[in-house]
Length: 162
Image 1 (cartoon, rainbow, N blue to C red):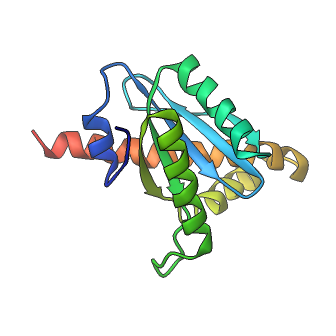
Image 2: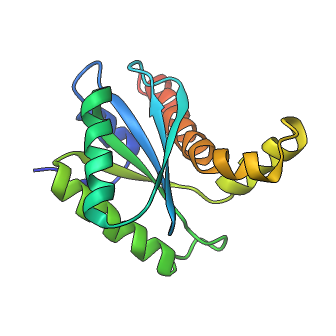
């Protein structure tokens, strides 16, 4: 039975070798997606799903999971700066529980504090993108930022466990 696990390390431990992780940046209007490589080292922005009804969002996620050999989900948790969880966290937790149950795939949360701000800063200052182009990229880039943080933690975990 699929579940939301306590940590990304637990998620990795249950993966079939060669599986990928799918990162989700769940917002009210969109879901940014990022995909890991099969070695769980590098995250790449994938796409942004414009949210409509849950069933339609779920179908889109299910198709991506099947197409890319995804074995687990890393879902950004919008924790407040003081570490507390507000309504957005509750909403993301409920979304995650529904997706895990419907798709039968494990997931883990990753603290996403400042991920969108960090990505926007890069897109404005370093990439010099227009506001419209930034809006097109920010959600999937934030998902990649979240995913890369989770993958980097797994690298540290691997090094520390030897």
